[in-house]
Length: 231
Image (cartoon, rainbow, N blue to C red):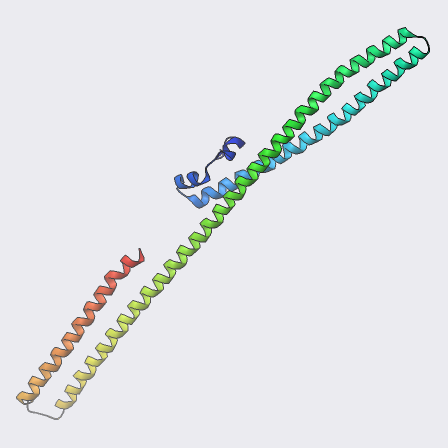
C-alpha cells in the first residue's frame, strides 16, 4: 500500500511531518519520491487521453455546424423554388442538428474544464516532487557531513592515544637506560656502593617513579575523555 491514497493526499501532504514521524527518514523520502513520480506519470497519461477526447469533440462540433449550415442552405433553396414544405423539413433537420451541437459544445466545455484541472494538478504535483527531491538532497548532504565529522574526530582521538603511548615508551626506555647505567657502575665491584651512592640511587629512582605515575595519570585521563567527546 502506498503512502498516499490519492493525489489530493500528495498535494496536501506535509513532507517534513512525514519524515519526522518515520523510523528511517532516508527510506521514507525515497518512497515518497517514487510514489510522486508514479502518480505524475499516471496524471500525465490521463491528460493525454482527455486532450485526445477534446480534439475528437472539436472535430465533431465542426462537422455538426457544417451540417446545420448545409440544411439552412437547403431551406433557402426550397424557398426560392416555391417549395415551402421542403423548406420546413430542411429547417426541422437543422433544428435537430443544432440540438446535437448544444450537446457537443457542453461536452467540449466540460473537457476544457477537466484539462485545466489536470494541468493545475500536474503543476502542484511537480512542485511537491521538486520539494521532496530538495529535502532528499539536503538529507544526504547532512548525513555526509556528520559522517565526515565523526571520521575526523576518530582520527584526532587515535592520534592523541598514539602520542600518549609514544611518550610512555620514551619514559620506559629512559628508565631502562638509567637502570643499565647503574648495573654498569656495579660491574667488577665485589663491595656494596657507599652510602652516598645508595642515597643517590634512591633519589633517582624516586624521580623515575614520579615521572611514571604522571604519565599513567595522563593516559588514564585521555582514555576517559575520548569516548565522551566522540558522542
